[in-house]
Length: 202
Image (cartoon, rainbow, N blue to C red):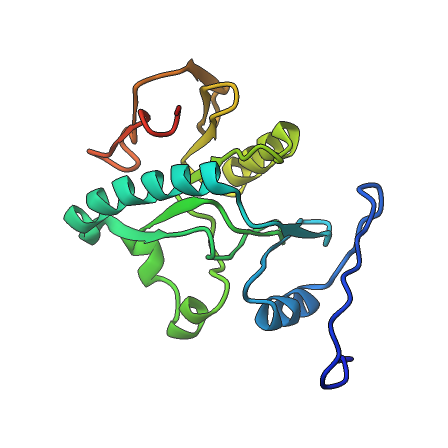
């Protein structure tokens, strides 16, 4: 792997949206290892996706989301493990995704080896949340949500603060859309969790 000579500044390559940079699983792992400050994803077709840092509004909303889920998790830790947006999941279709928030049932977590838990987790979360930022494509986010469900997720929320609605994804069901709800329930997948959306809609 080539590195810049000492004392030189790195160069950034910007790719047009119609040019896809494809990497193998091994190359993706190598890239992620040396670029830990970047949030990288890989599609099932091998396309590399670089997600830029979020802006202030999105960061605030994401913090509210994780803080609320954290309270539920602390009271219900025996049920499973929770993860933030820096966690990579290797889905059965070959994609590597990093949801904004995710949760894996305890028995599925225990089925992983100690080595598997250290790297990208080779499992699809049971519960996933994607929070749309101003620069996110709603079409691409919807495809990601469908991908999660197709690969084993049991409940998914796509939260869109711009249009102030939530799309709920469930296996074998049509997408349900809620317009500016004040709260939303984790149903039987994350029992007892209710997300307040007051700060999300600000």
